[in-house]
Image 1 (cartoon, helix red, strand yellow):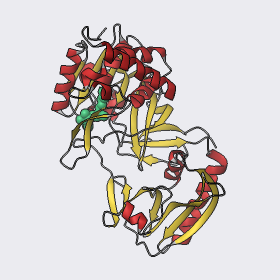
Image 2: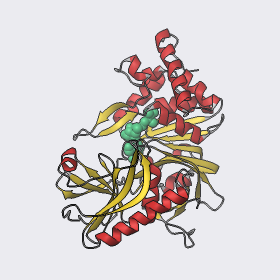
Image 3: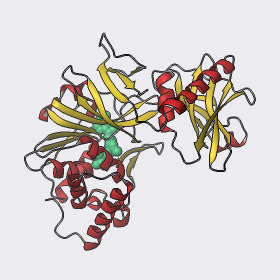
Image 4: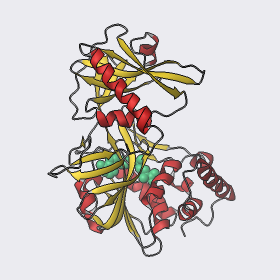
Amino acid sequence: MGALGNESEYAAALRAGLVVGLRKQGVLSDARVADAFATVPRHVFVPGVAVEAAYADDVVLMKQDGAGVAISSVSQPSIVALMLEQAGVEPGQRVLEVGSGGYNAALLWELVTPNGAVTTVDIDGEVTERAGATLRTAGYDGVEVVRADGVEGWKGNAPYDRIVVTVTAADVAPAWVDQLAVGGRIVAPLRVRGQTRSLALDLQPDGSLRSRSSVNCGFVAMQGPRAEYERAVRVVGDDVVLRTDQDQEIEAPVLDGPGFVRWTRVLMDRDEPFCQLDLWLASVFEEYCVLAASRAAVKRRLVRPALRWGGAAVAKDGSIAYLTSQAGPKRNLVELGVRAHGPSAVLLAEEVAGQVRHWDSVLRGGPDPVFLVHPASTPDLPEGPHFRTRNCVVTPIWAH
Ligand SMILES: C[S@@+](CC[C@H](N)C(=O)[O-])C[C@H]1O[C@@H](n2cnc3c(N)ncnc32)[C@H](O)[C@@H]1O
């Protein structure tokens, strides 16, 4: 159901091409999710956008704030597919989507049909209006669209078998857990210390959550009175900035010349993603943050980060250590190092370099950790590094 009777064959062909592309990328393997993608007319949900762009594997920006920062979009099909596969939605289930756009709600509707229910909430009235109108146009009148702060969930239709959050969250809102049915699952892009992972979190009998999968991703930031924002600590004006969580107390270090470097002998392919190493460093250092450098700062050698734009850093007691690199033994390889400044530069560089070597020898190429989520008031937390968010404690359990 749902596909428009008069839609062009051209759109249908583009849609079929999108499904083939997503399968090739390896982000779409579930036959029911693939059928949903083959059915829902994405072009209807992005009015005013060329039909070719509607079926590209790309985010479609729908709204920006005054500073030009994206605040609403129709998400990129590949991340939508990954999250729907993480959610494992079954016919007959009740689903809450946080962050509307219409498209994902329609896909969810295809997956819960028959006899299921989909509610989608968005904090922005313009978004709910557009999502409601496009859902009706595409024939998905059954989806309930509500304007609300998604941090509260939506009690009206609870309990839910699945809660799918499509906006970056810095916390697992207690309302989501309260509104989850027994055996339910939350899929949410959780950002801690600058690392965002879409976690599929299964509700456990004791009320805690346990991840069954995690996917590296990026979304627009949550808005509203209880949203938590990343903080920017300016090191050299706007040219060198440290991005930290709202509650991390990190003071700006002074960059004094080239600094001290500890090379690690750890080699990285130039195309290899850093996300697992970043997550490991974020797990072990409470003072982990993300260094962001302008091109000018890199050109002037104010900082020499491993990646063109910056990367992992640890800042404490007025000192900073960040990942740097130098040419490796082959053209495609670089050697990782740690460059440090400040009174504890040598110590901090040694400490971070030790953890880079540990990641390389023990964790590299292995699975991402399993994430356990407990309410902040839990007396006996599982052992391990802890990420403390406003309402919960997230424990990443690495397969050592
Ligand atoms: C990436 S878009 C959602 C994409 C959508 N699910 C789709 O079908 O493509 C994120 C949305 O989250 C909304 N949002 C931000 N903060 C929110 C909050 N506190 N509660 C509910 N929605 C929120 C934004 O207004 C934006 O429309």
